[in-house]
Length: 356
Image (cartoon, rainbow, N blue to C red; front, side, top):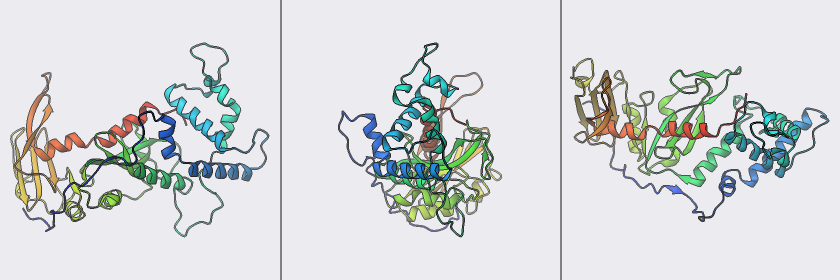
């Protein structure tokens, strides 16, 4: 197996995952929320929202917002994610038909809609850079979230990198269509999420440039020499990337396209014909390449799995019940830990409020 030389001895787990600051057992949800929406960020929203409203000229219903106004506004938004309705006015009903809420006691409907109209995250009058930022109006929030996500929680050893989608059907130069995702049209996000909880600790928004291997290195940059194990799909996986991750003290494992460079040609599907559910592996130093035959051949590359170890996955043939099939350990672990970003999307979907 001809592979690029590399060093793997530093890939030993030193990850001490979990919350960076332990909270008392009686901590309230609002107190957890305040770890991410800190006072500095509330003040930023107040300044930029009032600035934007003033720039738009006089509005008879507008009065400057305060931190208390924005906290009430955000609270109502979170409530809309729990109690869903297709019409915003339903939340301010004064007579009970299907349901009646207490939204009107928190904030009048017109005040809520006016704040939503003028809610702003960045200064439109800030000097423009030579290389314009397509996400300039969102950049302060994206930077803030990426920072507090990492400050408040350290993911445990196993994480996954994958695409996530924010639903959007308007006109946008970098809007994407991903037919395999539950949300097919929208803004694509590259995310690093913990495999067992779905906690997203780092992300980047796609704006028109795709560089899979560079993207992985950007997302794992805060976790060098921690022994973190990153699972990814075949868009990213390649021998040079996994070799470089190994030198940075990070494990990498993922499905890999058979036409990638430096893979062992003697095991590629076009050279070897395996019976269904058979598998073969090859190793060079600590780099492992496995081929498992299902309906199609599945290739897996890893810089930390033992090529001799095996695991099991569940398969189903026709109408038969699921049964366990032996596969290389790298593939079984990939199937177990690759779902972190999907879990992120699932958790977000439970509380997503309706919006345009």
